[in-house]
Length: 248
Image 1 (spheres, rainbow, N blue to C red):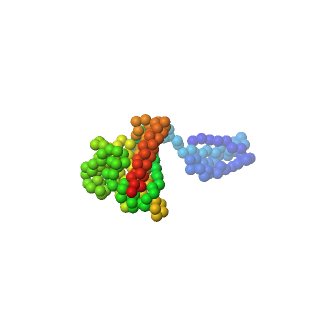
Image 2 (image 1 turned 60 degrees about the vertical axis):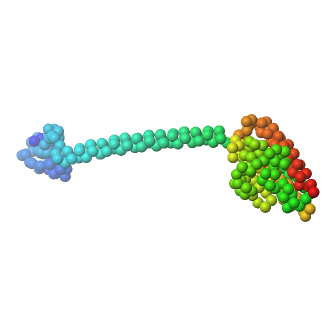
């Protein structure tokens, strides 16, 4: 119980408070004494011990839920961190493999060279082809030997030149054929072709294709020397073929 003195000229009653924490009780303690009116009011007792009392069932459930949420959060963070590490490792591995593949591609890069050669023959195309179009006629052009070791005159036939070079017939038309050297490190191919050029003459064409990157000397100078050597050699072959085709 607590008493408060209030000037009688200002107030005679103390109104009840609307706050639930403090209840004022109107109490007249007696007649005016010395121009003052004593009014008593009561507070709802506050217990420090009550504020520190153990939590009830609902409070314990709330604490348990909070702990569980915190534990779940930590586990999710750990799981996310682990997944991130796996993703980073996968990215690093992918980049490493890509780098290795790029290096391998660079090491095995190709550089195909084409050498097209032609000459004019004073004879119709069909006449020229009968004289120089046989798959083993190359022996006469290059002044060496040529033997068919497999097949006949169709695609898939194999000829051996100078007793050591094998070439396979990979395609054939009425007035052309293409051969390849399967054991060649430069993936060498050649095509012999005759094209009509009017009624009385024709074009004799010899085209070489090979991978210059696989030459023993793949430098620019080495490639240039190789092209020059093959051009000179097969220009001579074409001239020999021309002479044979024009001979009556």
